[in-house]
Image (tube, rainbow, N blue to C red; front, side, top):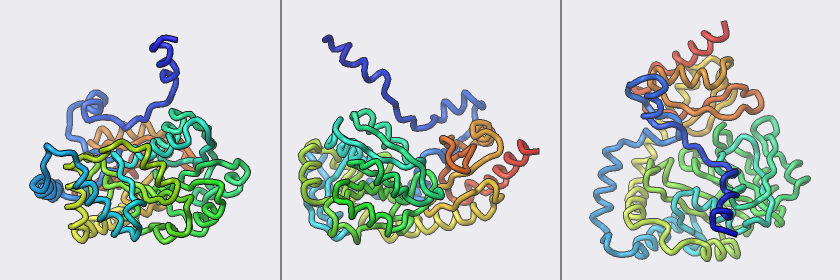
Length: 360
């Protein structure tokens, strides 16, 4: 078989779509300044603050050397922060790379259960690694479908908590119920844990079938540096370490992450501001648009008009948002992250008007 024939299988596999660029937006609605609200990036962390951390981080490293010393220090700090030993912390090139490592661990030989809706890359990566993907709806849009999980007997269950795109919190009792089934591995994606204030670290030492995912992309506003990590133990930790590349996180990224951790109290102010802004935003929206409330700094809306039409209308006013697949009561859903209030002061009124315009 030729190498080209070997590549053909990848022509039919799904690809993650990260939204549209400003240049693509200009082609749709003309040249203007756009505010990017489509990727759940943390715009509450001031750019100048991030730049100061980056300059300080650069002073502390020698870029001619491999990053082992600084990544070891980051691992040590993360272990202390989370109350685990250093062997339980595995760094990764963003949380997405850790997701891929987990699938590689079970490659082509396992079933994964996903709730709908959730972070779309789980399904895409699982298919690319040959796993069998089983999906089902949340119960009442917010509760895990324990019955369906039990009936399908998956090897892996991925749970995003708070969930993306809805922002709802999964009850701890349900998470414990899943973990009590020692025949499955629960991957708990806590990408937004710091901002929501909800974590399940307290369950860590009692379950060797738990993997907790974390990232510096959201709470710490470092999406461009790709710094993620997993918390797990026992056999799972050993295998993930074996599969991980020698240096998944650069010296610069690890050094900036260390500076960020030193300034966590400052970041907490930005997290509080993001939640306060989201609460203000939700109160301005008509009830028919906001069908559920979020525990993080992003929300999902449901329009009477098609989500694509609402997307274009918002684009005309300079706001880039994200169209997502319909689910439950959300027939025309659109997700957006919050931004500092002065940047989105007119946005709730605009959203209400778009919905009214097309419903008259």
